[in-house]
Image 1 (tube, rainbow, N blue to C red):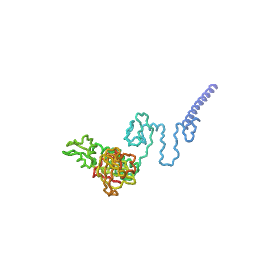
Image 2: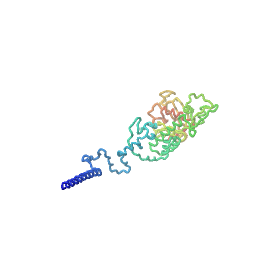
Image 3: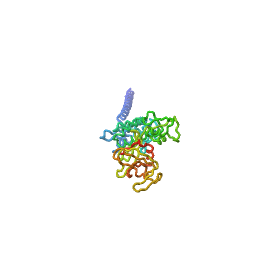
Image 4: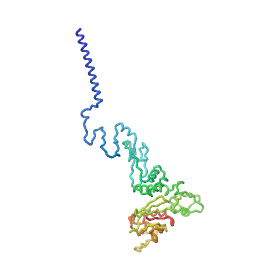
Length: 383
């Protein structure tokens, strides 16, 4: 009997020991999981300025209020970020979401191509982008309106807004932007075969019986050469009644900025072209308002300083193959004559004060304006 009692006591001791051991093991497991116990090798610290693998760098103390938060996401955040492309400086504005092909606007000469996040053929998703701050408006509301109109593809509104902006004091970069876009718009709407019924600067003329290109051109205060060019007329001598022609409501006028060595050509109040010019030495090009007196191709010319005569068509002729004579209407040029615009065989003098007072252009540029200016109608203002 005593042996039986001893066996029972021993059994209870064993049971209690087993249960106690299990409870202790479970408690140790819970303690390790809850407190975040780590092995000594996991508690190493990183040198200053570096982070251990898997850690996110804490931002340094900053005093700038505009400092952006760290863009480094955690593992779950990184997975979310890969599913979208946020705006960044390298994203092409016109690239549709998820597109892997370039969708770009033709850039002006000298401009840098920003490109797009996903290059053609790329299969690697772009890195998560940091949200860019909203662009601040410029000092010119008209310039901002012009940019917005261009983004919408509204060339008419853009032309009006950018023309107004040019009459203001713009920063050099903004001025260059407005000029470049106005010239691009002019190429698309004016110096092409395109017509729009709501464009006040152009129209469509139906040729009547007995009309000529010259009579149509003079009625619209443009040149016959310009009519031929924009309508791609192959034989100017054949003009049929009922034929439809694009016409431009002229005249074209110009403003020459002596300080900038630049001639701006306008149709109404809209800038359509600009050209670099050469001017008279010792401030020899008088300021004032001039009209176009006459126009000559392959002109003869006699150098007044040497008496040497050059025949028309002579490749050595210093004034080239175009002459646009000027007549002073008002200003400091009053009473002075012999001035004009012409080409040059010395391109290095463009942008300098090197002529005897006339306005020099490259051969290509003078040929272009020659076909724009109408005798006794177009005006040139030198200031």
